[in-house]
Amino acid sequence: MPQSTNSFDTIVIGSGMSGGWAAKEFCEKGLKTLLLERGRNVEHNKDYPTTNMMPWEFKHRGDIPYEIKKDNPVVSRCYAFREDAMHFFVKDTEHPYVQDKPFDWVRGYQVGGKSILWARQTQRWSNYDFEGPKRDGFAVDWPIRYDDIAPWYSHVEKFVGISGNKDGVDTLPDGEFLPAWGLSCIEDHFKKAVESSYKDRYVVYARCAHLSEPQPIHIEQGRGQCQSRNLCQRGCPFGGYFNSNSSTIPWAAKTGNLTLRPFSVVHSIIYDEAKGKATGVRVIDTNTKESIDFFAPVIFVNAGSVNTNLILLNSTSGRFPNGLGNDNGLLGKYFAFHNYRAHVNATYEGLSDVNSTGGRPTSAYIPRFRNVKKQETEFLRGYAAAFYGGRWGGGPDTSGHGEELKANLMSKEPRKLGAWNVGVQFMGETIPKETNFVSLDKEKKDEWGIPLIKFNVEYDDNDEKMIRDFFEQYTEMFTKAGYTNIQTSDDKRAPGLDIHEMGGVRMGHDPKTSLLNKWNQMHNVPNVFVSDGACMTSTSTQNPSLTYMAITARAADHAITLFKNGELK
Ligand SMILES: Cc1cc2nc3c(=O)[nH]c(=O)nc-3n(C[C@H](O)[C@H](O)[C@H](O)COP(=O)(O)OP(=O)(O)OC[C@H]3O[C@@H](n4cnc5c(N)ncnc54)[C@H](O)[C@@H]3O)c2cc1C
Image 1 (cartoon, helix red, strand yellow):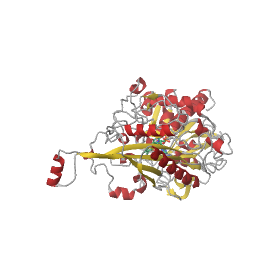
Image 2: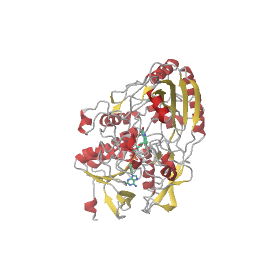
Image 3: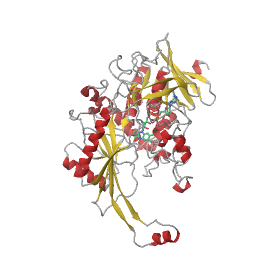
Image 4: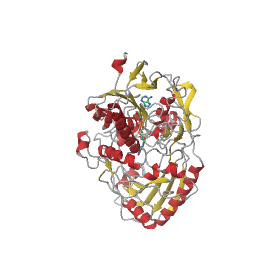
């Protein structure tokens, strides 16, 4: 096609959590935007086939049939890969990748990406996170600090809708919150036990992207109040949680400036050596297998961390034979993730006269307390944790069959509730290292001739030491809370199942040691921006998507200024 019909002001690659934000910001400010998505379209409500189904309407009552599990061992390990939402996950068999070292790569290839499936946990980073690499001497210094991103956190939070409390904890900055659902009685008990025993450890209500009390900006998006159904991964008919499909993408479309093109796998970014800049994007239409070029002076790469690395590594030219902007050879390196391997569980015999009932889209959260103000352990950085508690048993006796079952069900004597079961899930920061990297396989290609991505990522001794400390500290905290039968466990999962892949195209001050500047522009190709997880210099402990969205909105704002000033033509 002639260039004029394929030209836009900006191209955004990937329509998930971060790409949706880039598209919204550009379209609102009047830029003609092409949003490219490799998967199918998923329209809010229209394409949520299971959203109103009852448990008995599922052929396997929600479970994944054995044959599917057997053929898809990686995605089957994800807790949310269930019969009600499996159509939003990439099956291992559909899009293979190469694991030189085991890596569980969980993906959602459709308009909305993984934003349909996420667990909606949205904690801000603090300056302890942005200053971490410099203070503790790993990776490279972040070129931004909390103050640079704080207004963008607010910008995103107001539009997305975040339920939370203002806790006044300096490791977990407060934001623009809708009312919180509140802590359950057992969470409140743990909070009191921890906060009375330690001066620097807190148990708070985990902030989450749910509309507890929709504001006019949410109503304008066509979204309504969260009903605490806890069926979010199916897509929510109320728009009660944030996903790109119910929020940023329709908002961008309403401006008339958006062209959304599903079924469009980006093969590479086109670099024009004469002009010394990227001029467009090469796409393969997955229906027709046709190769089509699109052009724009501003290109945002938001394909999800791993695919963003893949696209850049595959964008070779005479000027950049090893991948776009990759003069220092660091593209794909310093790849990192979160470590969710460890758990501590226990029982509590107290609070025997109360129980927690009803749904709620979040839990309690314990921000990082290790190595915050100073280095105090033999490992670097630290871990946050999610706390959960519930009582099992009670209700009618459903044991037995036939006459016996009938008799048990009719029994006037309800079964007693058991003791409380409590537990914490470890959320460890990992240290980005040059030896943890993704690269392109030299031989294996996908059905469109694009090289497969190859993982060389593993845990290290720092992670092992951190897990041991988590076990010790939470055993102590549970003991102080009066919990018994304390059990520690390490499920030894491969990296990746945390679904928080980060790095490979990190931000930094120096083009010799990083790929992106403080505005997420490639040092060597400034009209290409990377603002998904690939840009992350370090990983912190917090769930990262809120930060991806805020960094994207900030980078888009900068790109718009440059574009309007004529600096990106
Ligand atoms: C079960 C689950 C629970 C999670 N819970 C949380 C949580 O509680 N909190 C949190 O912060 N995060 C959570 N996450 C992670 C969160 O979903 C991701 O961090 C977030 O979606 C990343 O946004 P993104 O824009 O980088 O990528 P995505 O949302 O994955 O979007 C990338 C898009 O790019 C498209 N794409 C890829 N390659 C190409 C190509 N070559 N050409 C065109 N398009 C392409 C993909 O199809 C996809 O639509 C969870 C994820 C899952 C699956």
